[in-house]
Image 1: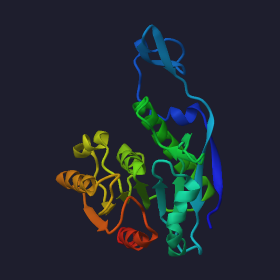
Image 2 (image 1 turned 180 degrees about the horizontal axis):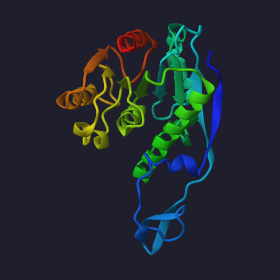
Image 3 (image 1 turned 60 degrees about the vertical axis):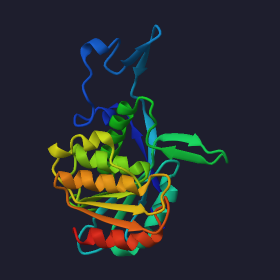
Image 4 (image 1 turned 135 degrees about the vertical axis):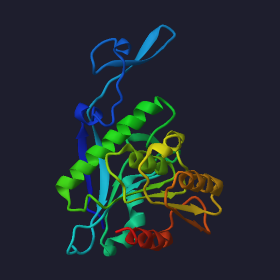
Length: 261
């Protein structure tokens, strides 16, 4: 199956990666550097404080070690999913020499049936959550590098639904130059779209269900147009299906990855 989960105790060092954490002006700091006021309203301040907590990542290793280190596919799940559930979509890649890592969003909640769900962010303090998520992924890659063998020049980012924004954001951060970004059933986040002209381009694959009513296929088309406008190499695959990432689509995704190894 997959080689379990590992917990990362992510403290202030993870939050304050120099490439991720934006500077906050001194006049916005009311107490220490680790306790910053980020909002004032109705006579009170809201402070942001980095704290230690555990994050989880499911990892699926290739069946057989190859003569060279395998590529790494980082797979970001969609809203309400979990790393354990999402990584099962990639079982067809286990026999194809790809290391798959599926991090789990740290925001958690209960569905109506009391099943726990996980997501990457809400609209609350969104800009800070994005920064924290980017630091989380950077830290995770470092942990993976210590625990597993993979080719750090062959890193692919895949997102489904809400995870698409994660893949594009981390791909545009500059901490790694992705060998490809795969957007499944999602759209291009506005903050990334605004800076496309300043980024080093990377190959992108847009995979979308034609009957998707959660994120309409038109969002996939808009993503393609925006990327192509700035010279990104983009391929698309619109399949008969809804808001899902069926196992049957893994063949197409695998072949696209293989072309870029």
